[in-house]
Image 1: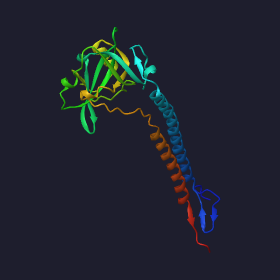
Image 2 (image 1 turned 120 degrees about the horizontal axis):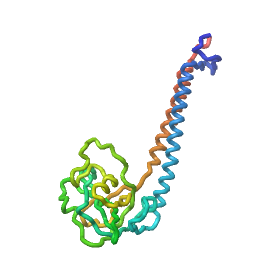
Image 3 (image 1 turned 60 degrees about the horizontal axis):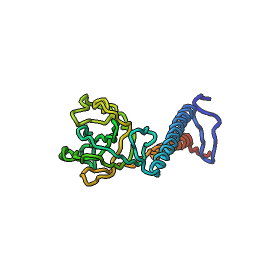
Length: 244
């Protein structure tokens, strides 16, 4: 008996199911890999659900007054209220930010907490590249109130160009780099401004989304692949035999 054939064969009327060692091992390997990938995606989905629960809990909490001494964990994703003075000469523009398909800039401006040397960076909104940047960055003197959402610092980016900073035009925002460049004590958090709509800056911020559905979809996809492999294995190993 050839080693490539697994005995015994199973008969179902005129059909004979006769699997082979090679296809059986290949199928088991592929199914195991697909199930492992599906379970990993399920685990990631559970982690993202916990993260989304944090987002939702922060969304329901009352607006917090920031005084410049808070840790990131105390204000992360919460609605916040700031009182301070703008420092427009330290403003920077983050390049290559799009809105409805148009290229433009995000205006990042520090706000100084009164009576301290502590600052927080505020994303004041988006403007197109054709905008008058000096006019867009104009702010009132003295104490102002800023309402917004506190978000973690932007993640690390792959910067293809060595020229990542050109004056006040930056390719990406790094709070650490900003603090070093301007020798300022800057909080490790970014505030996305929500009020002040009359200044012409566009502020349509995305609600925090952990991406649970993406991982659930990937898990379903991998389970589907495992099922498809099993069905294909059965179909390829079932033969119709003529009845003598």
